[in-house]
Length: 157
Image 1: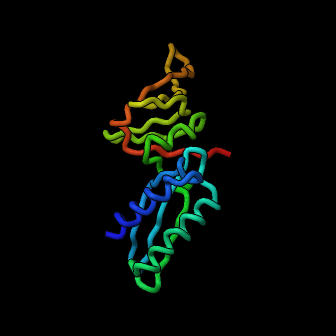
Image 2 (image 1 turned 90 degrees about the vertical axis):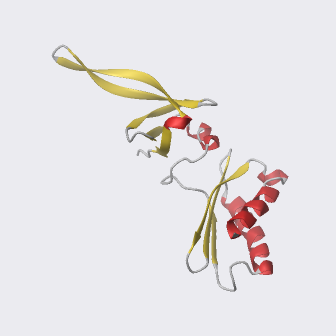
């Protein structure tokens, strides 16, 4: 119930000039009146934008008493450990290593090269046996969004 109210408030907030490239990733309601709001933007969400959205939501939550007098509201970006959920998150990660979990249980790992309307393209390095030796081969693999269960950006140092 509160989730739909928060989504509606965010929809209105995202119409403002400063927030037009922002979008909701996920809302999570927890026990003990805790609400997590994960947002992102096409250019990357800033701390200041998260702070302003948090204050905006707190104003309504306080006025309406949706979560009672004591609650915890956390507004943040999804962070690198969370999987990409929306097609809109993929373009910012072009050039990064990703692990793509497929609906059938298999996974593919490679560098995200392109994002289309219906699919993504990753570059995989695969060892292929050629005679008695193994050779590294570079493949470009298209993966339809319909086949993707989850995609995680792999951080390398």
